[in-house]
Length: 143
Image 1 (cartoon, rainbow, N blue to C red):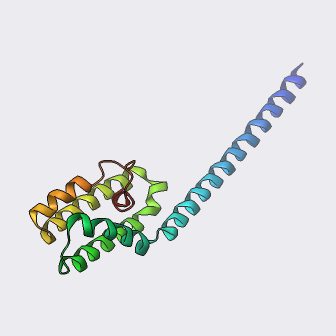
Image 2: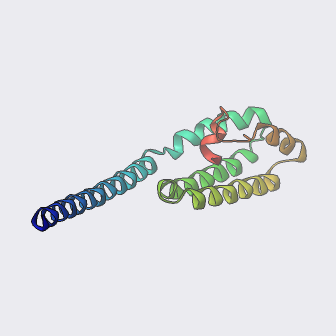
Protein backbone atom coordinates (compact mmCIF):
# COMPACT_ATOMS: atom_id res chain seq x y z
CA UNK A 1 0.00 0.00 0.00
CA UNK A 2 2.78 2.43 0.92
CA UNK A 3 4.58 1.47 -2.26
CA UNK A 4 1.50 2.30 -4.41
CA UNK A 5 1.06 5.62 -2.59
CA UNK A 6 4.72 6.48 -3.14
CA UNK A 7 4.55 5.56 -6.84
CA UNK A 8 1.38 7.66 -7.29
CA UNK A 9 2.99 10.63 -5.55
CA UNK A 10 6.11 10.39 -7.72
CA UNK A 11 3.99 10.04 -10.86
CA UNK A 12 1.87 13.10 -9.98
CA UNK A 13 5.00 15.07 -9.10
CA UNK A 14 6.57 14.19 -12.44
CA UNK A 15 3.45 15.18 -14.36
CA UNK A 16 3.21 18.47 -12.46
CA UNK A 17 6.87 19.24 -13.11
CA UNK A 18 6.51 18.45 -16.83
CA UNK A 19 3.45 20.71 -17.11
CA UNK A 20 5.23 23.54 -15.33
CA UNK A 21 8.16 23.23 -17.74
CA UNK A 22 5.92 23.27 -20.79
CA UNK A 23 4.05 26.33 -19.48
CA UNK A 24 7.40 28.10 -19.16
CA UNK A 25 8.22 27.18 -22.76
CA UNK A 26 4.83 28.45 -23.93
CA UNK A 27 5.34 31.74 -22.08
CA UNK A 28 8.79 32.18 -23.63
CA UNK A 29 7.42 31.43 -27.09
CA UNK A 30 4.56 33.92 -26.62
CA UNK A 31 6.97 36.64 -25.48
CA UNK A 32 9.21 35.98 -28.48
CA UNK A 33 6.23 36.22 -30.87
CA UNK A 34 5.08 39.50 -29.26
CA UNK A 35 8.55 41.03 -29.59
CA UNK A 36 8.81 39.92 -33.22
CA UNK A 37 5.36 41.32 -34.01
CA UNK A 38 6.22 44.65 -32.37
CA UNK A 39 9.46 44.90 -34.33
CA UNK A 40 7.68 44.00 -37.56
CA UNK A 41 4.97 46.60 -37.03
CA UNK A 42 7.58 49.29 -36.37
CA UNK A 43 9.51 48.43 -39.53
CA UNK A 44 6.35 48.24 -41.66
CA UNK A 45 5.14 51.65 -40.46
CA UNK A 46 5.76 53.74 -43.61
CA UNK A 47 6.22 57.33 -42.44
CA UNK A 48 6.50 58.80 -45.95
CA UNK A 49 3.32 57.16 -47.23
CA UNK A 50 1.27 58.08 -44.19
CA UNK A 51 2.67 61.62 -44.27
CA UNK A 52 1.56 62.00 -47.89
CA UNK A 53 -1.95 60.81 -47.00
CA UNK A 54 -2.18 63.22 -44.07
CA UNK A 55 -0.88 66.17 -46.06
CA UNK A 56 -3.32 65.25 -48.83
CA UNK A 57 -6.09 65.60 -46.26
CA UNK A 58 -4.85 68.65 -44.34
CA UNK A 59 -3.74 70.86 -47.24
CA UNK A 60 -7.16 71.32 -48.86
CA UNK A 61 -9.24 71.07 -45.67
CA UNK A 62 -7.18 73.70 -43.83
CA UNK A 63 -6.41 75.69 -46.99
CA UNK A 64 -2.72 75.71 -46.10
CA UNK A 65 -0.62 78.43 -47.71
CA UNK A 66 2.59 77.59 -49.55
CA UNK A 67 4.51 79.00 -46.55
CA UNK A 68 2.62 76.77 -44.09
CA UNK A 69 2.91 73.50 -46.03
CA UNK A 70 6.62 72.80 -45.27
CA UNK A 71 6.16 73.55 -41.56
CA UNK A 72 3.05 71.37 -41.29
CA UNK A 73 4.72 68.59 -43.29
CA UNK A 74 7.74 68.73 -40.98
CA UNK A 75 5.51 68.51 -37.91
CA UNK A 76 3.54 65.60 -39.38
CA UNK A 77 6.80 63.73 -40.11
CA UNK A 78 8.12 64.48 -36.63
CA UNK A 79 4.92 63.15 -35.04
CA UNK A 80 4.94 60.04 -37.23
CA UNK A 81 8.57 59.32 -36.38
CA UNK A 82 7.81 59.63 -32.67
CA UNK A 83 5.00 57.11 -33.11
CA UNK A 84 7.26 54.77 -35.08
CA UNK A 85 9.73 54.82 -32.19
CA UNK A 86 6.91 54.06 -29.72
CA UNK A 87 5.35 51.18 -31.68
CA UNK A 88 7.53 48.43 -30.13
CA UNK A 89 6.19 49.35 -26.68
CA UNK A 90 2.60 48.83 -27.83
CA UNK A 91 2.94 45.05 -27.51
CA UNK A 92 5.00 45.07 -24.33
CA UNK A 93 3.53 47.96 -22.29
CA UNK A 94 0.18 49.15 -23.64
CA UNK A 95 -0.39 51.67 -20.82
CA UNK A 96 2.96 53.38 -21.41
CA UNK A 97 2.31 53.44 -25.16
CA UNK A 98 -1.12 55.05 -24.67
CA UNK A 99 0.30 57.62 -22.26
CA UNK A 100 3.13 58.59 -24.60
CA UNK A 101 0.78 58.77 -27.58
CA UNK A 102 -1.54 61.07 -25.61
CA UNK A 103 1.44 63.34 -25.01
CA UNK A 104 2.33 63.07 -28.70
CA UNK A 105 -1.22 64.15 -29.70
CA UNK A 106 -1.12 67.13 -27.34
CA UNK A 107 2.29 68.15 -28.66
CA UNK A 108 1.01 67.96 -32.25
CA UNK A 109 -1.99 70.20 -31.59
CA UNK A 110 0.07 72.69 -29.57
CA UNK A 111 2.67 73.01 -32.34
CA UNK A 112 -0.01 73.20 -35.05
CA UNK A 113 -1.65 76.07 -33.20
CA UNK A 114 1.58 78.06 -33.64
CA UNK A 115 1.81 77.31 -37.37
CA UNK A 116 -1.74 77.89 -38.57
CA UNK A 117 -4.34 80.62 -38.10
CA UNK A 118 -7.17 80.42 -35.54
CA UNK A 119 -9.68 79.73 -38.33
CA UNK A 120 -7.52 76.91 -39.66
CA UNK A 121 -7.08 75.55 -36.14
CA UNK A 122 -10.85 75.41 -35.69
CA UNK A 123 -11.06 73.41 -38.92
CA UNK A 124 -8.25 71.15 -37.68
CA UNK A 125 -10.00 70.36 -34.40
CA UNK A 126 -13.04 69.15 -36.33
CA UNK A 127 -10.79 66.84 -38.38
CA UNK A 128 -8.92 65.32 -35.43
CA UNK A 129 -10.15 61.83 -34.55
CA UNK A 130 -11.70 61.37 -31.12
CA UNK A 131 -10.67 57.70 -30.93
CA UNK A 132 -8.55 55.11 -32.67
CA UNK A 133 -11.63 53.65 -34.36
CA UNK A 134 -12.23 56.72 -36.54
CA UNK A 135 -11.67 56.30 -40.29
CA UNK A 136 -9.12 58.92 -41.26
CA UNK A 137 -5.39 58.96 -42.04
CA UNK A 138 -4.91 61.09 -38.91
CA UNK A 139 -5.64 58.00 -36.77
CA UNK A 140 -2.47 56.38 -38.12
CA UNK A 141 -0.48 59.32 -36.78
CA UNK A 142 -2.25 60.09 -33.52
CA UNK A 143 -3.28 56.67 -32.12
